[in-house]
Length: 197
Image (cartoon, rainbow, N blue to C red; front, side):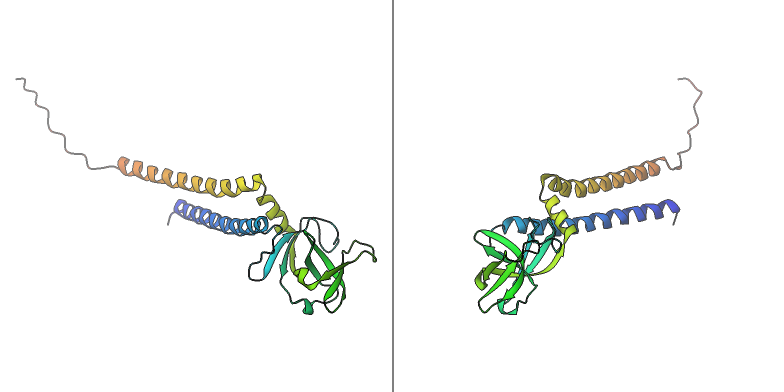
């Protein structure tokens, strides 16, 4: 195999792998972002998991503003002191740490709040325990839910596909030209007749 063909094959493989990987990752992040928008102010969960973005600094340093958190529905009787939980407080969703467990409720407080500033949270208001967190996922979700992120989500795969298809078309045209220009057996020239009629 010639070196040029090897380079073409590597380039083609790279473009395909990059496009597929980018598309899959972008779709996963977009699905989570759409779920976040849809589930805003609703008790929506997928297989017992809910997803949120931290919007206040009440739990710093454990949770930063903009951080993505995964909350798993948990039996309130299984909760322990220092678990981070997400719960309803009126129409607001709040994530705080448990400082005391009681029979039908827990006492929760933000890490940044003074010791006396606690909230009583009844079991029916608890959505679940925070089981995972990611700042990079939070940044990605917030970006992809912006108009710039949506444009990028559409433009990058489309541009990659267009470049790949243009490159393939160029190769086809080049091969066609080469096949037309390759030396072919030309028909023997017929001798010219010098006779004039």
